[in-house]
Image (cartoon, rainbow, N blue to C red; front, side, top):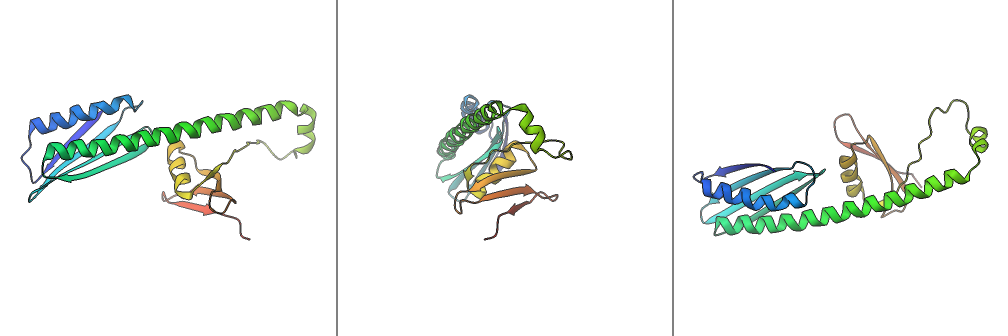
Length: 182
């Protein structure tokens, strides 16, 4: 894991830096790809603040903790990060398993159709047909999913309104949402 440690209002200490790096190494078992960690250690009067940000496998987790001891602040922030990483990993694993099941169902339906039926229904101008599976999720979850797969749009069922929505990426990096009007 690539780690950068920044000290603010605190003398740079090699022991604090190695302590933080060694503690961050325990997250290597959770992330598959190379990860980046930014550690900011700050002292404000009597408060010792540890801000730790980890970006890995398509998600970013943040931990912030204030205590009277820098070592305990680092430990508590890392405990928060561990809970967030485990939660994100479970969520992504669940999404992948449901996507695989729906893909298998589509494949079985396509095999059941006769090859001649597709040619008659499709006009000659359609060059490519792509089936898109959509599942219920919130708009925030859809934005996370788009960041994860780096697509230009995402079709999903809005969990609140139970309507099909389309989330698309604008040229400036923001997102647009298309939802049906009633």
